[in-house]
Length: 357
Ligand SMILES: Nc1ncnc2c1ncn2[C@@H]1O[C@H](COP(=O)(O)OP(=O)(O)OP(=O)(O)O)[C@@H](O)[C@H]1O
Image (tube, rainbow, N blue to C red; front, side):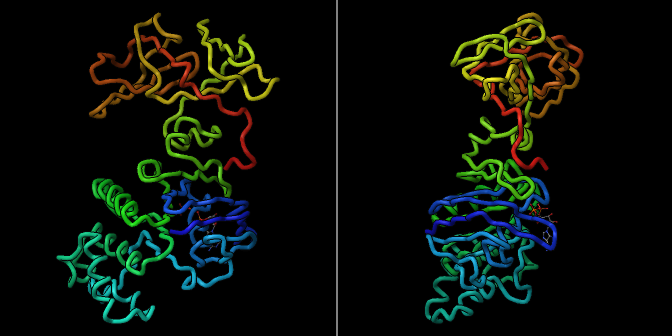
C-alpha cells in the first residue's frame, strides 16, 4: 500500500491552466474520488499522477519518493479507463498475461497470477473469450483484473463505469469497492457522478476550475459543504438567505419571512455579518399543516419516485425542494407548512473561494 502526495500541482496546456493549485494527500489503502464538473481538471490530475502528462509545476510523491519526472512504466500504477482499452485480438487470459510478460515475470508464475486475477473478478469461465464476446460489465472487469494482475502500488480509474447502463453501473460500484477493500490498494477514482463518488469513496475531493474546493468524507461533503458551490454540486441544496436578529456568542437567532425565529447552534463566520446563508437538504425539511411550520408554502410540483416523493414548494424564501414519505397525502396546489431542523441547517460562507467556475 502506498501513500500519494500531490504538492501544488500546476498544469498548463499552452495558455489554458488545467490545474491551478492541487495539493492532496491520499492515505495508504484509501479510496479517494475526484469529483467535479466537466473540464475541472479531474482527468488531468489523474494523468499527471500516472505520468501520461508532465506537470508544469509542483511535485508528486509516492511514499515520500518524488516520482514527478518518472516515466509512466516506472511509477508502479494500474490504470482503468472508460473505454476498456482491451486488446481485441487477445483472449481474456492473454489480455491479463500481457502486462506480466512485458514485465518479464517468469512464465511459471504467470499462469497462476492470471488465474488468481480472473477469480478475483469472477471471470474464470470466460478465460478463452475475446473481448467482443463479453458484455460491457465483463469487459470492464477484465480491464480491472488487467490493472490489478501486475500488483501495482496504486490503482487509478478514470470514469470506468461511464459506458455501462444504470443497473450494471450500480452493480459494478459495489464490485469495485469490495474488490478494492479486499486488495487494500490505494485508489484514485475520477467521476463526474456524485452518487458514484459518495457511495464508493472513503473521501471525496470536489474540484472546480483546477482547484480543490473540499476534500472530505462523503457525509461531510454532503452535510457540511465548504462552499455554496460544493453544496449545489453535491446533491440538491436549498439555500436560505436570512437575517440574524439576535443570539449570543455561541448561537445566532435568525428570523424567517413569516416572523418565526430559529435558534441555531452556530454564529455567522464573521462578526460583521448580519445575515446568514443556510443550507437545508430536501430530506431535512418536513412538510406539516399550514400554520404549523416555520415557513408557509404551496406545493407547485410533486414527483413520485417509488420510495419517496419530491416536492417543489413555493415559499417566501423562494422555491424549495422537499423530500417526504409516500404516506403523506399532499398534492400540487396544497398549502403547507415547512418545518426546519435548526440543528441541521448548515451555515455557508458568504464569499466563495478563489475560483468559482
Ligand atoms: N491535451 C489537452 N490540450 C489542451 N487542453 C486540454 C488538454 N486536456 C485537457 N485540457 C483542458 O484542461 C482542462 C481540464 O481538463 P480535464 O480533462 O482534466 O477535465 P475533466 O474534469 O476530466 O473533464 P471531463 O469530466 O469532461 O473529462 C479543460 O479546460 C480542458 O479543455
